[in-house]
Image 1 (tube, rainbow, N blue to C red):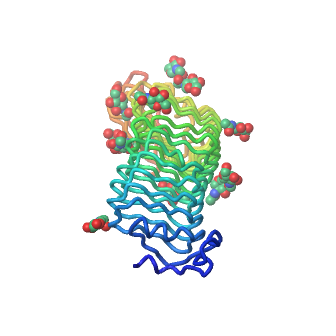
Image 2 (spheres, rainbow, N blue to C red; image 1 turned 120 degrees about the vertical axis):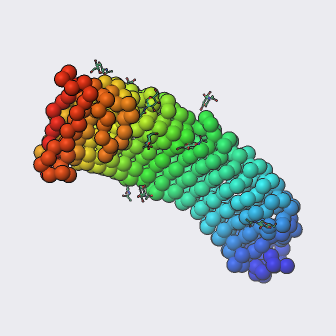
Length: 399
Ligand SMILES: *[C@@H]1O[C@H](CO)[C@@H](O)[C@H](O)[C@H]1NC(C)=O
Ligand SMILES: *[C@@H]1O[C@H](CO)[C@@H](O)[C@H](O)[C@H]1NC(C)=O
Ligand SMILES: *[C@@H]1O[C@H](CO)[C@@H](O)[C@H](O)[C@H]1NC(C)=O
Ligand SMILES: *[C@@H]1O[C@H](CO)[C@@H](O)[C@H](O)[C@H]1NC(C)=O
Ligand SMILES: *[C@@H]1O[C@H](CO)[C@@H](O)[C@H](O)[C@H]1NC(C)=O
Ligand SMILES: *[C@@H]1O[C@H](CO)[C@@H](O)[C@H](O)[C@H]1NC(C)=O
Ligand SMILES: *[C@@H]1O[C@H](CO)[C@@H](O)[C@H](O)[C@H]1NC(C)=O
Ligand SMILES: *[C@@H]1O[C@H](CO)[C@@H](O)[C@H](O)[C@H]1NC(C)=O
Ligand SMILES: *[C@@H]1O[C@H](CO)[C@@H](O)[C@H](O)[C@H]1NC(C)=O
Ligand SMILES: *[C@@H]1O[C@H](CO)[C@@H](O)[C@H](O)[C@H]1NC(C)=O
Ligand SMILES: *[C@@H]1O[C@H](CO)[C@@H](O)[C@H](O)[C@H]1NC(C)=O
C-alpha cells in the first residue's frame, strides 16, 4: 500500500520507545483508519500526509505531534470526522477542500500552522481546537458553515482572508499586527470583526461586516477600505496614519466616522455612495492627503479643519446644499495653496459623482472648478440659479 512508503525508524519498530520516534516520506496517503493508526508511533512526521479521495472512515491521526510538511485532504467527499489528538505543529500547509460531509474537525492542541487553506467545507459548523492556533503566516477560509472562528486566535499573521462563510457571525482575534493583508467579505449577515489589540496592518479591506472594532489601530502601511458594510458608526480613535488610500464606499447605513487622531493619508481619500453619511466632521486633525480627495454623496456638512496639503485633485459633490463648505474649501485651492490639484465642489447635484466628473448645471448651490490640465484656461462650471448667491468664483490652479 502506498502509505507504507514512509520509513519507520528502528526504534519505532521496538514498540514502547515510540514516543521519541520520527518518520519520513515525501507524501504518505491515508486511505482508512488503519492507515492513520499505523502512523501513531511517529512523534514527528517529516513529509506530507494526504487523505485519499475515496476515504470514508473517520480519520484520527493520534500520536503525531509535529508534521514537518503539510496535512492535506482534498475532495474527500465521504469523510465526516478528522482529528489529531496530539498534533501541535504543521510546518507547511493545513489544506482542506471539498469535504462535503466533514462535520467534525478536532485538533485540541494544534497551535502552530504555516498556512491554513480551507475551502468548500459545507458541513463544518465549528472547530474543536481547544488550545487554538496562535501563529500562521496565511489563513484563507472560504465557503464553510463555520459559526465562529473560535479555535483560531492568531497573534500574528501575514495574510488573512475570510470570505463566503454565510453563517460566520464573529471574527475576533488577538492579532497585534497584520504584515500583508486582511480581507473580510460576504460572511454572515451579522458578522462582527473585532480586533482589540491590533496595532498596525499593511492593507485591510472590510466588506459586508455589521461591526468593525479597531480601538488600538495606529497605522496602516498601505490602504484601508470599507465597502458595503452594514454598520452605522466607525470609530478608530488611535489611527494616525494611513500610508495608502482610505475608502468608504457604499456603506448603506454609515452615518458617523470618527478618526480623531488621523493626521495623514498617503494616497487618495474617498467617501462615496454612503447614503446616510451626511455630516463629515470626524477628521479634526487630518492635515495631509497625498493623492486625490474624492467625496460624493448626500452630505450636508463637510469639515476638515486641519487640512493643510492635498496633493491630488479635490472633488466634493453632494445632493444637498453645501455652499458654505464649498466656499471654505475654495479658499484653500490653488497651486501655492493647500489644494493643489483640480478643484471641484458642488452642492444640489442630482447625481453626485466622482473625481473627474463634471457636476451637472442643475444645482443651485455653489459649483466651481479649476484645472491645470488645460493650461491657463479655466474650466468654469455654471450653475442653474445664476445670479443668486450660488456661484463661487472659479479658482485657477496653475502648476
Ligand atoms: C473528486 O473525486 C471524484 C472521485 O471520487 C472525481 O470524480 C472528481 O473529479 C474529483 N473532483 C475534483 C475537483 O478533483
Ligand atoms: C506584532 O504583533 C505581535 C503580537 O502582538 C507582537 O509580539 C510583535 O512585537 C508585533 N511586531 C511588530 C513588528 O509590531
Ligand atoms: C496593498 O494594497 C495595494 C492596493 O491594493 C496593493 O497595490 C499592494 O500590493 C498591497 N500590499 C500588500 C503588502 O498586500
Ligand atoms: C457584499 O458586498 C458586495 C459589494 O461590495 C455585494 O456585491 C455583495 O452582494 C455583498 N454580499 C453579501 C452576502 O451581502
Ligand atoms: C448582531 O450581533 C450583535 C452582537 O455582535 C447582537 O447584539 C445583535 O443583536 C445581532 N443582531 C441581529 C439582528 O442578529
Ligand atoms: C491609544 O494610543 C495611546 C498612546 O499611544 C495608548 O496609550 C493607548 O493605550 C491606545 N489605546 C488603545 C485602545 O490601544
Ligand atoms: C508597517 O508599519 C509598521 C508600524 O509602523 C512597521 O513596524 C513596519 O515595519 C511597516 N512595514 C513595512 C513593510 O513597511
Ligand atoms: C459621531 O460619534 C461621535 C462619538 O463616537 C460623536 O462625538 C459625534 O458627535 C458623532 N457625529 C455625528 C455627526 O453624529
Ligand atoms: C457610486 O454609485 C454610482 C451609481 O450607482 C456608480 O456609478 C459608482 O461607480 C459608485 N462609486 C463607487 C466608488 O463604487
Ligand atoms: C443619496 O440618498 C439617496 C436616497 O435618499 C440614495 O438613493 C442615493 O444613492 C444617495 N446618493 C449618494 C451619492 O450616496
Ligand atoms: C451644517 O452646516 C450648516 C450650514 O453651514 C450649519 O448651520 C450647521 O450648524 C452645520 N451643522 C453641523 C453639525 O456642523
